[in-house]
Length: 412
Image 1 (cartoon, rainbow, N blue to C red):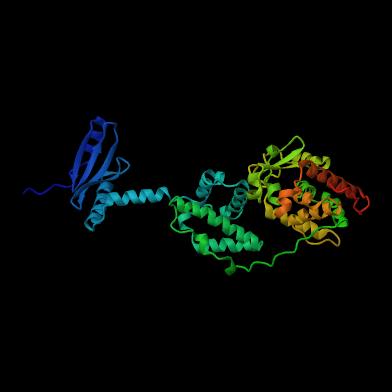
Image 2 (tube, helix red, strand yellow):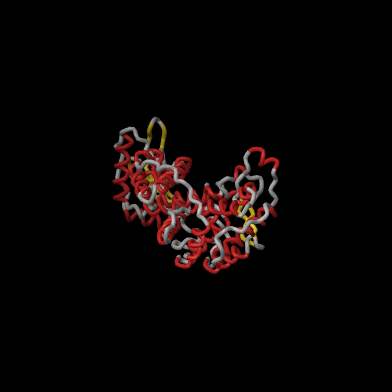
């Protein structure tokens, strides 16, 4: 039986074949084959048998892969075949794995496109904020499948350096992002689920809410010009409307029109207990003036409170805004330490001091009314609007230096 020839091809012959453009398949021996397609594509393939089946592995294109290099690649592949490896199948697996070797930045873009639009606006707003603020700067260039629980823990520890809740929210955002990665078969396990907050920091005791009294509210408002204009506007808007900070920071200009602020249901924390599609606040003239200042400050952004850095496509960062509020409060004489929610508490207690009925105060803050009052005491929109008129007039009086003693109104 004649011995099979190998290494029979020559570069000069291959070049002439390519120049001719005539389709062909030329064997170099031991399964290595040069092919030229009708379309003029020249390539190297290795033909082999494994498990009794004929298989082919594409090694590369000619002349990118020269003859000598094709022979080396074929020899290496044959060693694997002799070891029982189906090299064509293995190549397909590697290509599939490489296609899913997304960076965390690519994963976040996919999350923004596929997942975030299906979430409630307030949920998406919070998660994306921490993904962009904490996860992207630390892990954006990393391959997602290479992120380890140690990486996740280090990131959460850094966030916890700002506050316990910053760490907890960064962990929540990481879990959400890598849950999507698992669904896309990009990672096998979620590295953020392996991190437990108690191992990093103890949850702080529940903080007692602060409700500012009249003198404190006057001090607070009179000092606002010392803040950056957008921070001053945010603080005044919260004190005038009593909205939650997330509702304010996620506000878009499309929500503000005709003297009203429509907060869409999907942006509201307690949306599951809401029947209406939006919570509507009829704006006091002084509150409208705040929005007019904000319009000038927003520089064409769709957000009422655009990010101070990072472009107009993002809204202001909650944590950094809170830090600035705390720093401001610390400069005021004999003034308590406050957070954003304390301004909301101040609105409720202040309205009650104006003799506004409790159920109207609750509806003004978009609280659902529990039990029988929620069924039988129907609060009309006009009553809520009138409450905001009284509240706005009262704040204007404080700001102008009027008497601190609240004016008694008839109950509404």
